[in-house]
Amino acid sequence: MAVTMHTLMATFMLSLTGLAFHRTHLLSALLCLEGMMLALFLAFSFWALQFTSATLSPAPMLLLAFSACEASAGLALLVATARTHGSDHLQTLNLLQC
Image 1: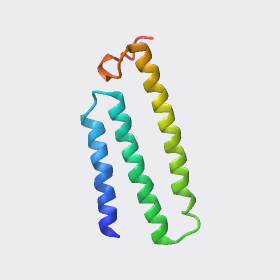
Image 2: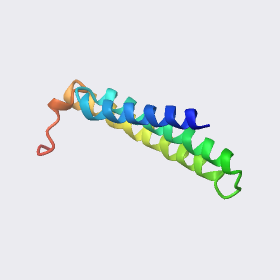
Image 3: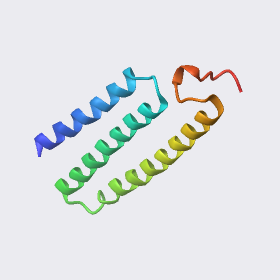
Image 4: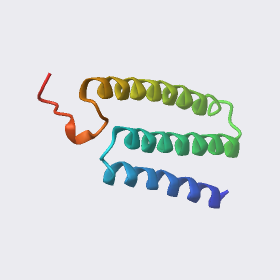
């Protein structure tokens, strides 16, 4: 079980470094966020299985529901950005303009 947790931690950290260092496209940032959420979901699932507690069992499903909401909001922002600015480059976005 320790090897699995170390693999999931490495997956989370790899997605986090990808989010921190590769900020060219909005789609790549969203994919890194999805990788982080997948690693957290698997870690919570293994954690709930390891402790066999009834109070921990809804936590992975709640995280998965929030992850689906985050993905749909991210894709909606991606489509809106691509329509208004013409691309998904993060350098073209200016937060001071309306």
